[in-house]
Amino acid sequence: MATPSTATRLISSQRRSAAAPVTRYDRRLAEILEHATEVFCRKGYEGASMRDLSRESGMSLAGLYYYFESKERLLYLIQKHTFTTIVQRLKERLRGVTDAEERIRIFILNHLEYFLANQAAMKVLSHEAEALKNGFASEVAAIKREYYRICVGLLDDLKSERGLQFSTRIAVLSLFGMMNWIYTWHNPRVDADAASIAREMGDVFLRGVMSGVKAGKER
Amino acid sequence: MATPSTATRLISSQRRSAAAPVTRYDRRLAEILEHATEVFCRKGYEGASMRDLSRESGMSLAGLYYYFESKERLLYLIQKHTFTTIVQRLKERLRGVTDAEERIRIFILNHLEYFLANQAAMKVLSHEAEALKNGFASEVAAIKREYYRICVGLLDDLKSERGLQFSTRIAVLSLFGMMNWIYTWHNPRVDADAASIAREMGDVFLRGVMSGVKAGKER
DNA sequence: ACTGTATTCGAACGAACGTTCGAATTACAC
DNA sequence: GTGTAATTCGAACGTTCGTTCGAATACAGT
Image: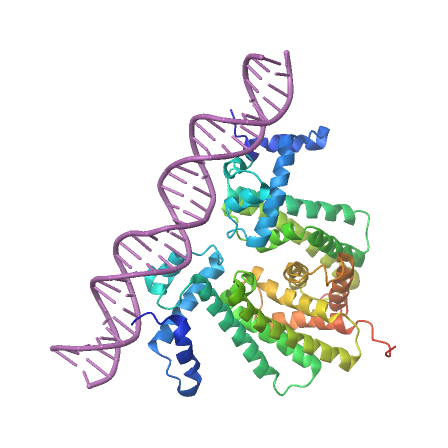
């Protein structure tokens, strides 16, 4: 019996945290995902063909299907892994920090650092957000919602701590816009590193929301 | 002799400003562009097939090619028209206004109003920025650069008028990010109208850049 | 060296793609 | 109403698409 593909293999992939086997299969799959990310980034999900992915990863067209059962599932794996990682790193970095402003700066820095260090993956995540169909889409959307909620929480904390008044929704979505748009313009030969950009964007955004109208007393 | 297609017909389309013939051809082409915009918005440029466009616009597959010679040229026509219009409207609105802050608020309002009133077209413009190849791409890129330069000018004016100190490039690109990202989240049933959002984004952005460090005297 | 499982591949499938062509139809000037 | 040009269409072109299948190869345990 052959053809395991990611469906059956997810269990073995879970075990990695226990005794770290990191099978040959896991390694090869990660390699393919990496190449696929690069191709999706360059040509877009619809624009990239399975033959492109085959050529780029050095594996035959049919061989790819040993590792995942469809092109869509491949995109799903990329998006899920990328999103899960960025959320997890954020949680680690936030642990122990209590100052509301500092926490937002950490959020911005974490986002931009990961974005620039994994530009291809993050572009695929941002740009191909609508490419997945119902089943796959909802699972990625759930992580996205969690990430969004975290940011809303951070801003609400700042708001109540300093008695500010602004629409959290618009503020959060504006911040995401500022940060995510970076994939359309960032040029490593011209632009500064993530930390500098994070400071600059953080300055504009935080001064923007903090120098606003203070809320009067309730009712 | 049949098959004019947009190549030969551009001249007649130019004359429109003089005596406004607005031929049957022009009207039909505009209709098709409108439907195509909607389909590109929903399924993406690569994801939308000529057969989709045919079905949506009610014209036969072959019939479409009477109006433009390729799918790529169709996207080009949509992008060029959309971009040209928004730049032109901006210039009209800026005429006569001298206050630097007010001019930036006009820029934001113009952008968001047009964005929300022509959401499909603007999404196609934002999302499919890389879909065009060399020839077509450079012409659209030129308009985009002009639009970008206008915004840089507005911010530089504000900077020197108030003696501010920040990176114009990062500020402009952050602003574009805030505004353009709107196509990923705006929901007319939940979110306010363009004017409200423009005010809110303008508040955050302008306070952000204006409450920054003032520049010391030169050298 | 042998055996069984894990991995890879060449070749092909039917479907869908963008585009073309010549004929049919429609609209309009006279 | 007739003739001419503008417009539309059905049918097909050759390519490329995502996916499948059975055979071939590599590898691990004995």
